[in-house]
Image (tube, rainbow, N blue to C red; front, side, top):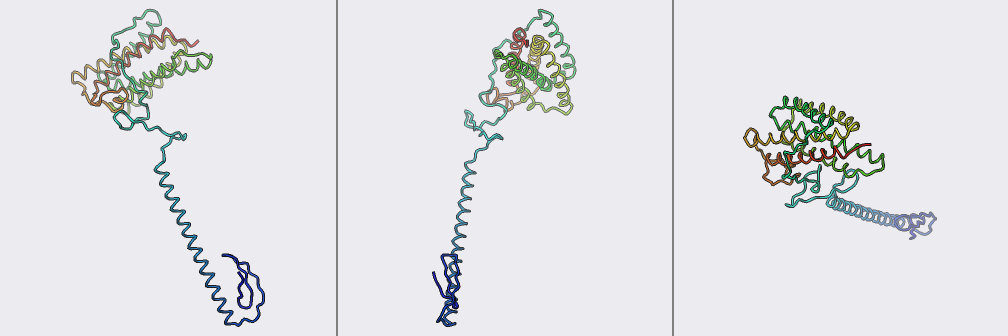
Length: 315
């Protein structure tokens, strides 16, 4: 576009103008002024309209961006630290699974028909050492807890979950070291440790430990873990036999626990939610039901460890 302004020639193109100044002939000052005013007005109008269009485009982009953000929020999936989406698990009654510490396929069904009276009679020197060791350990436990079976169970479960973990860990290392299968013992012992840990999680819901009981847990667990670790390296047979006799004592303790519940000495409170889901108990289950299934678990651990005593070696 070529325009004459004030005796000079301007060449413009679109919004931006390339300016070429040339002298112009035969145009009056008034005409030049009018031409300049008209040109200035049109340029200002074009600039304002372009700014308006630009603002509208920016506004549209912001609105689209906001809408996309809202849609992304709606479709967002809560992910773990590693970027793996957490599966949404629904229970049979239609409610969402509330636990992260165990999944529905990791729950337990206790065998209530198991023989609770079975006892391994000590036959050799190792058996007798294991049996006498457990009987000696029971003396301070009885003196401290007496008939406070809730606190007693909570304390003992912090110890009972150690042997399976230690045994599974050492057998795992043996399998790696010797390039051999474990015969399923690694998984069996780790499952035992997990089951004992769930006993503890249940008891903590029922019995709130005091500060000195927590301190005792730290002390006893630290001593027992290291002692059992060394013992398992020296003699897995003796280690598992001791655990087998410990489980027999646990069966006795839970039987006494049930007697106090039945007599009314201990209130038969509703079962914790975590126990109902882990053992698949009825919604109206009580403390008595929980202690019954835990006792059955201990009987199963008794049989496993007495059998492991004659089956497992680290050599």
